[in-house]
Amino acid sequence: MEYTPNLEGEGSIKVVETQSSAAKVLDDVVHRLYSKGLVSTDNVAAGFGVAICDQMDELLFEMKESVSDVEGVKVRALIRGLSESLDLGIRKIVIYCDDNELYQNVSVYFTLV
Image (cartoon, rainbow, N blue to C red; front, side, top):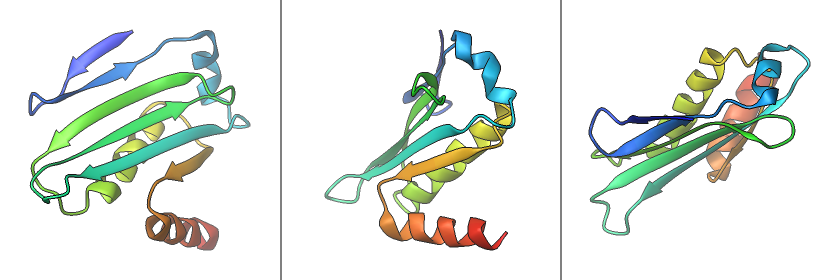
């Protein structure tokens, strides 16, 4: 496992090497992307988390990050997760997020593409 601190000094990134990690580049393997954006009740602080799992739900990548700008934190979480998925060579992914409106918009976009 590798832990890397966030550039802002708050949060971390963990890349997990498992036996199934080699399977992530196969086109027929479907992975799972979990993303969650969090905003404090007083809208002063925010953060997000991303996890990418293989078809057996084993963790391949995880990150948590605190951000100072609360605007669009859920969208940033999803974008970061999709970016990391591409960096890992993943081409098929199921998205799980905690914002139904965001999920619907992403689903419509990828259905049209």
